[in-house]
Figure 1 (cartoon, rainbow, N blue to C red):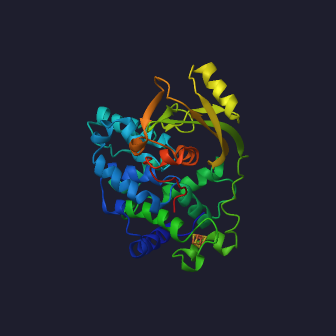
Figure 2 (figure 1 turned 90 degrees about the vertical axis):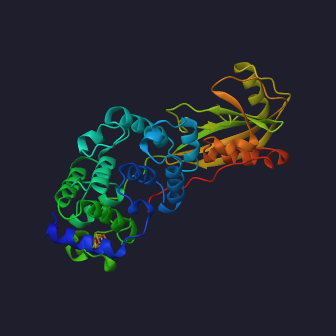
Figure 3 (figure 1 turned 120 degrees about the horizontal axis):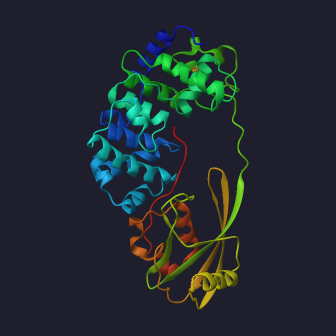
Length: 366
Ligand code: SF4
């Protein structure tokens, strides 16, 4: 248990007011803008998010604009941020806000939780930061801070340790300025109480912290057992003629939900095998095929080993989920970084000169 929670809360608030970073979403109270920032910040660094956030809001300034947007445009704006299902869930939630709440975000926690893609953290963050409601919001950073403060042992991502973290968050939530309190916990986790080597000497609540007092900061929270990484072999088909490249739209539930990539085949195929495979299954006739080497692409739990095969000859006539896309317009499509890397590595120099592609993916909120 945490001793003197009201005192801890007051000191956190005072520290936040003098140490907080000046971030664009901190200047607004609009629940839509706050929600956009919260979704973008999941698994993604602050400095990566800022330009995406600003571009996104200038293109779709209201939830109604997002609900009416072309999904391909939204995916393209998301390109480079990774975790692409977020973009689809955002569109679904925007439509629900428009259809069920007349275009205004509900200020009630239960109603927020009912929106697509809103978990307990997102609902709590929007309720507290936008509406100043005393709602707890526990993401990975906040869970780490609270677990250390109260010395909560065990795996805080499940079971009774997780409940203990949320209970403590609920205890701390009511009081002066819930919107600043939520951000103070997030900020302490980002700037002071980091996963490795927390800066306890700079911490405003160090004298109340159980993990610090007992020398447990290396084991609280309990280091997570990393799930076994899976190795996946794929073959990417790079087929480009007369300034156009063949792309495939990935299924909504796959790794690159709803995004455009070069067509992919399972397994590591040689150039001849890949050419025969597309002739058999798609009736696409290439004049030749060339092996362009392999590349490794690392995702959270998977290592993708991608063999690149360039197909030679005129592009075939295609229908959805395939399309022929101008190289000069790829920026306007939602291309994940895997596709960007494959095209850069596998296309001929004369094709590359026409290529217009977006930036790259990063990870980790801090
Ligand atoms: S004293 Fe150290 S471990 Fe405890 S909350 Fe502060 S930074 Fe984290």
